[in-house]
Image (cartoon, rainbow, N blue to C red; front, side, top):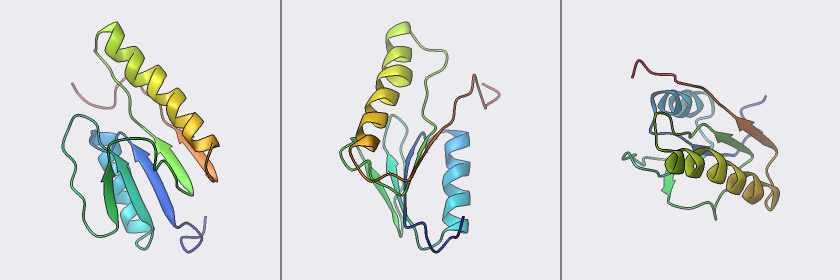
Length: 112
């Protein structure tokens, strides 16, 4: 993938250990690309070409990276985070011009 051809990313799960690593690597590899992060429960910081949003309305990007998920949660929280959010993000991506949709799923990527 040519770093000049990618202009924007929409990223969920950026406040997790895995998500923060993804954001850091994308920021280094694609320094001119816009990174839009979906805010969830943990705080995120916006700087330079990184912006924080609270909903999926601006879920536009050349590439959507969906790395948000709930683990060790109640069935309601688990369903809302893992099923409903994923479904809504896929739908929002289909309604916009998204070139690639990357879905990352893990049981756990932390020692917790």
